[in-house]
Length: 479
Image 1: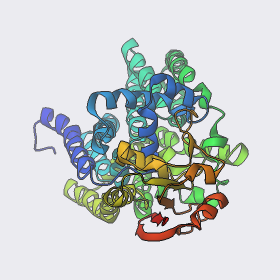
Image 2: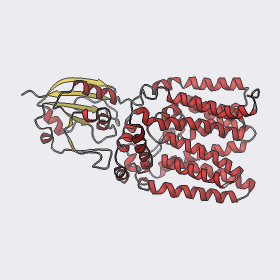
Image 3: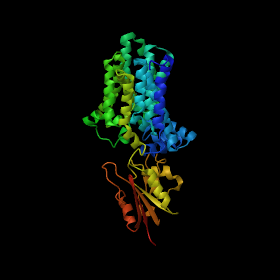
Image 4: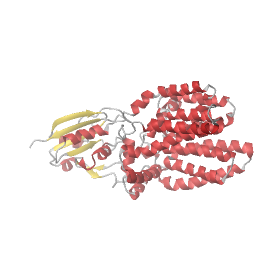
């Protein structure tokens, strides 16, 4: 990059990664249908503000700020999959620029460019940049907070500390566990104290206290809810800890290659910033694993997504040991390794194809049809998925006693008397989702309750469809 004017190098080092990330993340972003977590986001965000807060008192309390944001976003831009994914697309695009700026600050324009481009081509960036959840937003604000902290520790100004505190607050509001990065920020502050005095530590404490004052009132209901939200988890094994990098980066090879390059940053000049950035990566991993082992299962790799931009910034610093053409070739090669994952995530975000199942029902239903969703008490979101795609065109929900909104929950309550609720309905659809844990395939009736099975013995199975994740069956009773 030295053949270019200095001002152009300065701008291109972050503009090019942002453009690359914007293209990579937005490419075919509308193609995969929303999966169950995204369906849950839509279900909650389309409720009233009071109903969102009511749900937060029972479950997903830490996600209430994101649901409120999405609620207003949907009001402005609609609830198509692509419309709801735009905030995540923008966030990942911006994060690529921040990665480049972070690398440039400590290791120069070339390191910034390489780190930003590396981040842009990571499969995890595209995957969560196309997710209707708060992970991408949290990733952006963690990276930006880290950059602003580096600036503030070098040159303390009230506006940099204010910006830092705001980004910390926004990170926590996007995903509360992203605040684990503060453990690494403590190391950054301690290094600055050792170098240039202790007043900056006071500014940091004030900024974090202000952020906590914003985050805690909106998320306090969720602080004790992990047993409800994460009851599907078991305590993580040491192998899960060892495999965490491969899981976070989606492709295990990249989970080894990028941290390997990041380690090389420790051997170059400016090793101190590399060490403190590594602390911001490793300490949250350790904290999450320790909580999982000592308190309650919580070790989910995507909760550590905010570490990806920090590792990419470090990897960019490691790559400057190579000549620029060779370093760029390495970035391209790593991007190529992730292509199979990139292609897969653009086909589907999960094995549950809500859209195809809904199409089967829409194309074959008749007036007066009813439907049974099974199972209703699991994490498959079977009924919510049909609601998203069919809205008021879905068959009558025969077993519904109290819906998710009334329950201030993600689950409806079903009628206890199947005979009474199914009544004299002549055509009954059964949309059965495959079981998640243990994994087994749904048949026409193996996910139904005893009462539902008893009633359907008087019906004939007229038609049967199998789509990914679901078995859809039409039962008919002859007069």
